[in-house]
Image (tube, rainbow, N blue to C red; front, side):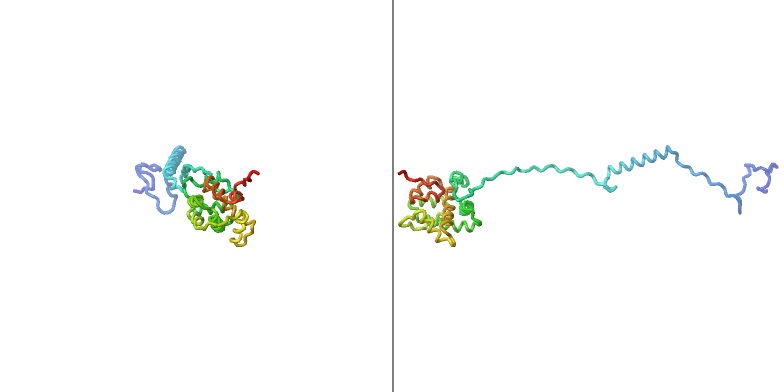
Length: 241
């Protein structure tokens, strides 16, 4: 039977009961079935679902998308307020005994370093070595002019090194006046003059009331000739005449 001719019923139209054979050779190719595309509603729903998934992943794992979580704000650190400290030294060689004794607690023997620092600040010396050198010379000279109980108490109240300087001196047979005492110190300090020697003596003796009470200083001055009070930073009392 020929499938390309008229149908068996004599008509020239194809009958569905007799399918045509696939064409061979040249001729129009059969149409391909249409591709189904998503409707706008489906596309919108898909986009919404995609954005929701991305937002969820970003919130759950920010580092996976190249972002970092905001750093936590550190808690403020409490600060300790500064406590002002008192200074020990006045600005010149004349010191106030009332304010000076506040630097040395009552009943506590001061150290040699504390005495040297007091002399350095009182005399405005550039170094502690210079202040220590002057202190040794002046205390050694003073030791020969103070005798009796006053000498013992003064050696006990001052630092141990200063006490040995005072107690180891032989008492002088004739105490020097204040001016002569200054001149004697000038001969023991290299390059000193009477003016600079007076400054050195006053720097050392006016620092002693920081560590010795006023009553002992009064007793020491009572043993010395007139004029020493000014070297200790005290006003010189003139006898009534």
